[in-house]
Image 1 (cartoon, rainbow over the protein chains, first blue to last red):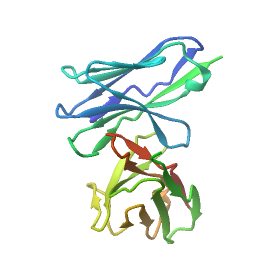
Image 2 (tube, each protein chain N blue to C red):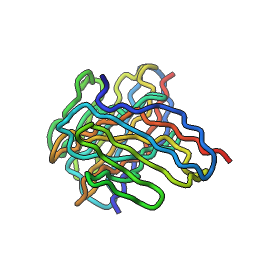
Image 3 (cartoon, helix red, strand yellow):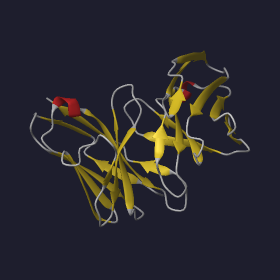
Length: 111
Length: 115
């Protein structure tokens, strides 16, 4: 089983749609969680950290369920510019940067 | 702030040659940097942790004699792919911890093509 699993997609959605991505992780000792966005042939860029209580940043909402070991990302009112690959990232060590990346979920927002 | 610069962005070389990739933290000091590799449609895989003033720590399955890492200063880490072969063709990305935050900042990546 992969340490961080994501549905690779692609998710093809119309502009304005709401789309949700899920991610599961296998290491119950994982400490911190993130969603990164990666555009084609570019480096990953931090979209948002994921907190236990859930957090929101504009159209983006992230949730963490430690008991079930999954993380979610909700994107509301999708824009064409949201088209990218969304990477679920887990840091498995406290005080370290042992980041484990999921394979990413590809999103295409269609006009 | 917390900008990581990586160079070159793209390199094409012949099989058997060595290629050096530089990773610089421009506006902060980084005692630790990380090197990742990403093959097409695959996830980023951590290759090694670069430690300023000491030896790098390599992940299982990564040949330290093939992927030489030098972290000679607080702002520069280099990855040298020695005797490159076509199977080494990949997207190499460095990163460094953002000061005061529990997140990594990534360089723009270097796309290596070995002919």
